[in-house]
Amino acid sequence: METPYASRVSKRKEFMPFDSLGDFIKAADAVGEVQFVEGADLELDVGGLTELNAERGGPMLVFDKFAG
Image (cartoon, rainbow, N blue to C red; front, side):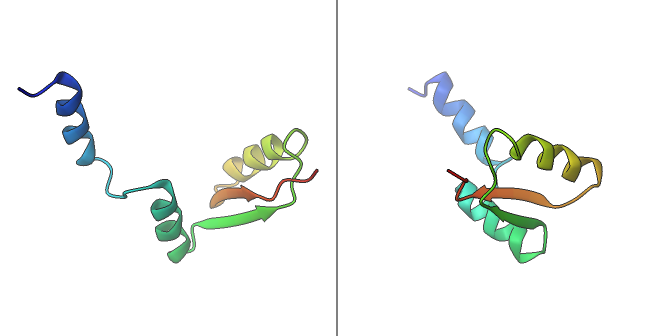
């Protein structure tokens, strides 16, 4: 007997061509749609940089190695 949850998971796979977030980031990076940001302050920089990047139509930002 199939549960309602199992049915939702199998349907969701049709809309998720990547197995993980890491796979998605690698694919986006391969086509030049990712900019990696290291050393940003989580409270002071991330929101502002994300907002400015979105307004300018920039690539996806991936934040890593936060300051502090």
